Image (tube, rainbow, N blue to C red; front, top):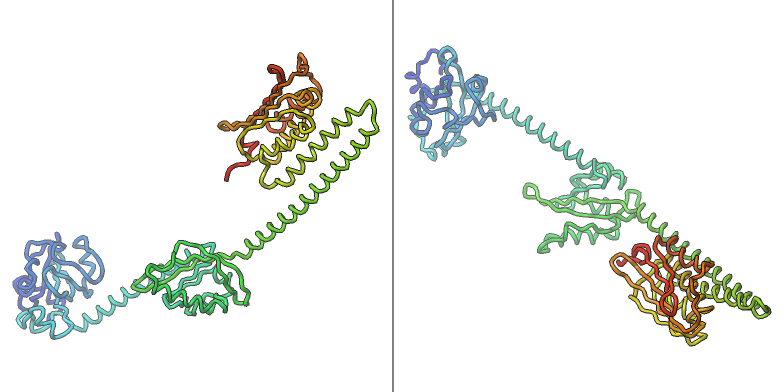
Length: 487
């Protein structure tokens, strides 16, 4: 057996006998000598070839970039792979020729006697004595194996810590189970939600931990059905189910499950969101809306009663009046019209008011007592409550004026038309009759109401003019302000 000191005195020509599995390299990583056995079984390892073109360091796991990288491996057990050779080479390296060359001396790494024949090796391929003791190889192999195992454990530990940090940073509870339903991961939010520690949860059957007793059988059946289903259940849906805390409290949760495969084993990660507060907030909102509806109906009822009482008082005063009787009659008609419009609005408050019904309610009561002809035309559109009250006030004023000295009083014709064009809602009222028409539209309170109400309340336009043998009122406003939007 040759010692390290003796190796330093060997010449390349002397290596074939004691070291048939050897290679020497110069500082340029060029092969200058190859042992006889290695030449026979790995022809690609030849004099003049570069190290990296035909040899690879398997252990330790490095990729040497140059002579100095290989020099760092001196005295360390190495495992090499050679192109064309079916088994790796186990050996060591040492410096020769005053440190300007490296000798790699190795032996095929055979695990059993049968591999000797399978690899095509003969006894002549081996030296009578190993160049380095097998004990050295064993010790170095152990050291390298322990070092690599420790590095693998360190990397795995770091990966596990990163994964746990990601899971714990989630705002939702996240639980991962294997294909048997056993918990393998339980993040911090899940610990808080269910009142369990991670140590208590991992390794336990999920059904026993968080599934209500009455639902455990269904949970296990669902898990079993997953493997028999052709495609499995959808994994992109969030469903609402019941869960149970450690205290026994059953509570609603939103659940989404995503299956995945790792190393041939199927796992399921469940993302869970506690719906207790959301359900309570929704219930409180529904209760508040119900209370608001009751109060609104009570208010509407009281307003309707008060308007009805005012109408009765006006009728009593009208029956006893002399000179003021026409004025009281007009007042009663206006209040009655407002009462009818209010009743319509209170009945249709949540949906809005259909425009045709609003026109009928405000205008027809004035025309029914005479032979005036009222025509109205327009699309079936829903009017917002606020806009409906404004339009009711305008239509009531127009109908009152027509009953006093217009088309209703003279048994003429009233044309009411509304349109929706692009983003504009328009309303047009046109009277035609044979009665007297003032030369100019008066500037009294009624005319002021017609000209200012829609611009003020609906940010629109309003115009009152004479046209032919009657008067014309035209108003416009934005569709967004007047109409209930389509769903």
